[in-house]
Image (cartoon, rainbow, N blue to C red):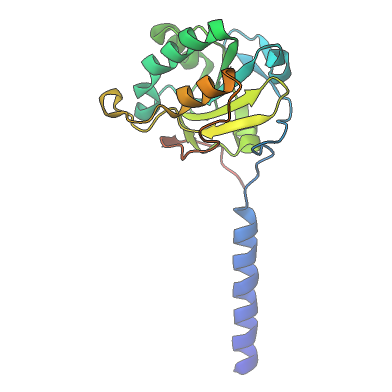
Length: 199
């Protein structure tokens, strides 16, 4: 009986170990480290490589969605960020990693909301996995050398009227002024990225 109990405990520990190992972050992207290059296509079929944008002062990578109500609550704010910071040398790249959102849907959504920046399709959530991006919207600021400087949210409320902290704007303003960033990481919130099924 004791032997059977011991075997059962060992089996349980091994199973839990496998489960915990499977849940370890897959992120290849870490704060204050260089982000690996990647290439994705936009909804027109044009390829965009992250490193092609290093000629800018910085790159804001946004994981966004077409169907998520929280991501959609930020559409106008995203457009305003693009218009305010593009002239200052900041590039904006949108990434859609949701398995159920088609190229056609992304194209229609971008046009409807006036997105003038590229929105790239991340098939099989490969890039979302590399970034360990979990929700939409989720933001990454990469500097002109390819180093990740900020990760997190745009601001602290999906309701524009209740925003008290403009995290991304504060970070961008400090970054462009060559000052220490007020924060390097905040907790992103939104709809979970709908990943492909994994066996």
